[in-house]
Image (cartoon, rainbow, N blue to C red; front, side):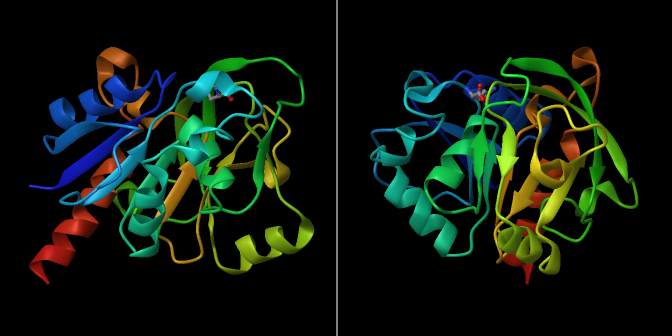
Length: 226
Ligand SMILES: NC(=O)CC[C@H](N)C(=O)O
């Protein structure tokens, strides 16, 4: 059975939601890993959860990027294995240089908490195949620094390599090109501001987030059965 690692930083607050989604809804193994750990041996995927790691001091994700677990996360990503960063996790991935660009304060300078319709801009990634031809989903957003920024040259690269995965239908925070989620060039690292783990069962109001995890699980099953 596929094994997910969910690193926990001081101030993470979506880690248990993530483990609940993975274990109880998707029926895979998921372990909380302290940020002081230094190994991810034995894991098939890593999910950096949302929250306020290290109190968001300096910038969201700027201190977490130096946590003891991060060299293992970077090595894991560079080995081509799946890494997902949700919200604060996305911020950590940009700070760590695993994804291009940066997350700035929302244009409104306010924390935004709302459901957000998203367009799936690339259905052919290991994170989106389970959505079939569904082109729009809705996921909750909850962030103060979700305003994605990159320069023109980076945006051109993201577009040319089809690295833009989710786009806001209505831009809530000032993000460049309505970007809500991107992958790295190799396609194995996903960062996204919306929270799929908060949309995995109808008691939460939506199951639109399931496809991301189902897609990754299916992609890894193909790897082990190949
Ligand atoms: N839900 C989250 O992960 C929030 C991320 C970060 N603390 C922010 O406010 O932008």
